[in-house]
Image 1 (spheres, helix red, strand yellow):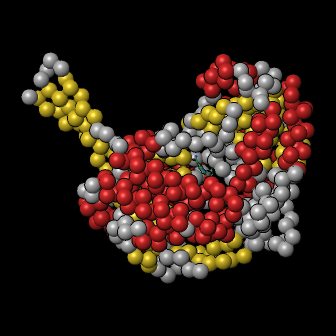
Image 2 (cartoon, helix red, strand yellow):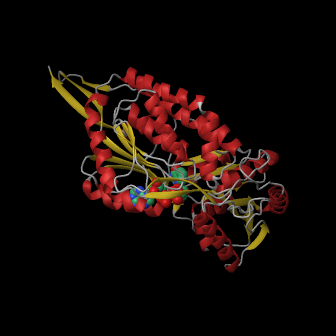
Image 3 (cartoon, helix red, strand yellow):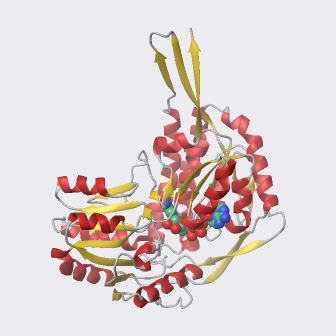
Length: 479
Ligand code: NAD
C-alpha cells in the first residue's frame, strides 16, 4: 500500500519521490509506505490552500456545513474500514477504534457543521453617544493543523473540522507514524465534494517539513497537538512571526482517590484511565494518589484487576490492551520502567514486555503499576505515555492537591469523592485545564479543552475553537 499527498484536490506523489515505511506494531511488520515530503511539497500545499481561500471563505456557512455533514456521513459509512486501518497503523484494539476513535471523528465534523450555523456576531450599542459597534469574526486564511499518533483520526479531525467550518483553508499533517486514516479521509473529502485546495493533507517527518509548514509567510495560524518538546519549537518559530498558535501538549495527570469515593466505580474507571489505548491518551491518569486509610485495600484490588487485563492482538475482541505504537516508543517505555526501578520503585504489576502468541515481533507491554517513589523523581515528573502508572498514599486534602500540582504539566485531573464541598475545593486548587469529578474522559464537545503550564497554550472545542480560527474586527459607526 502506497499513500499519496492530497494537494489541490488531487492525490499526488511527493516531489522528490521519497517514501517512509509504515509498520504494523501488532506484528512488527512493514505494511506500506507514505510520502516523505519535502519543502517543495509544502510549498505546493500552501499555495493550493491560499488560492482556494477566497472562494471557500465566501461560501455561505450553510453550504460549508452541508459539506462537513457529508464528510461525517462518509466517515460513518466507512466505520469498519477506518477502524481496521486505525488499528493496523496504531496497534489499538479494533473494538476501541470502532467504539471511540472513528465515531468521534464523525462527531467532530457534525459538531462544527452545526456550530458554524449558530455562530453569532456581536453588536455593542453606545447609548447616549449615537454610535454602535458591530464585531465580525472573519476566517484567518491558510491554517496549519499538526496532529500526533495516539488518536490519529480523532485528533486530526478535531482541528480540521472547526478550521474548515469557520471558512479557513487547511494544510494538515498527520503523524508520520499513523497516516493511514488521514489518507483515507482525503478520499472521503473528495467524494463529499469538498472543493479542491480547501483541505490539503501532506505526509512526512515532522523534523523534515515541520519548520517549513509553521514558518511559511502565507500561514496565519498553527494548531498543534503533540509533545511539549515539539510544541516549544513551534512556539519559538511562530512567536516572532506573530502567527496565532494553539498548543496541546504532554501531561502527567493525577488521579486523586479519597476514602469516601464510590469504590467500585473508582476502581473500574481507574483501570480505564490508567491503561486505555495502552496508556497512550494525553488524558490518562498516570499518577494515582490514594487516601491512606484505603490505600492498602485499593492497591490490592487495583493490582488484581490490572493482572486480569488481557494484552493481545488488536484484532482479537478479548484484548484489553493492544500494541504500543512503534518500536521506538516501546523501547522508551521499557527504559522508563528500568529508570523507575533504578529510582527505587517496586513493581506491583507488569513491568515487562508482553508476549502474544504468534506475534513475537509485536510491541506489547504489560500494564504496569509502580509503588514506592516520591513525587520529585523523574518517573513522576516526566511523561511516559504508556501503560505505566505510579501509586502513592496521601493523608490530607491539602497534601493531595500539593502532590497533584507538583509537576510542570497541567492538562487534566480526576477526583473521586462523595463529599460535594471537597469536590469543589479540590477542583479549585488543581492546576489543570480539565478536572473530572467521579468520572473520566466524559466529553462534551462544547466545553473548552486544553491544558495549563507546559501542557498547553489556548483551548480547543466549541466556541473556543471557532474563536481561534477567526479574527475579530470591530466596526464603530457614529450616526
Ligand atoms: P510529537 O510531538 O513527536 O509529534 C506530533 C506531530 O508533530 C507529528 O505530526 C510530528 O510529525 C509533528 N512534528 C514533529 N516535529 C515537528 C516540528 N519540528 N515542527 C512541526 N511539527 C513537527 O508527538 P507524538 O509522539 O506524535 O505524540 C505524543 C505526544 O502528544 C505526547 O506528549 C502526548 O501527551 C501529546 N498529546 C497531547 C494531547 C493534548 O490534547 N494535550 C493529545 C494527544 C497527545
